[in-house]
Amino acid sequence: MIRFKDVSKTYTGKEGPVKAIKDVNLTVSDGKIYGIVGYSGAGKSTLIRMING
Image: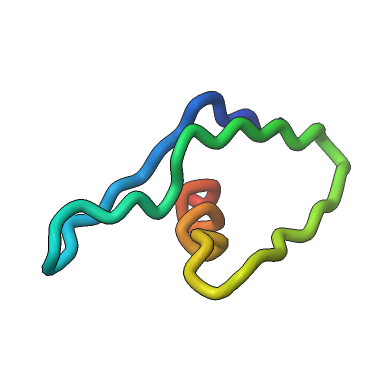
């Protein structure tokens, strides 16, 4: 099982902090498959990297 509770990720940008992920709650049960969709820059890749550790 994968479980995230109130997870956030902030990067330091040229013009100050950039919140890539903010207060995400996610539970994926064993054996389940999900897709992640969203606009460009929405934080999809950041979320996947956080899941992968």
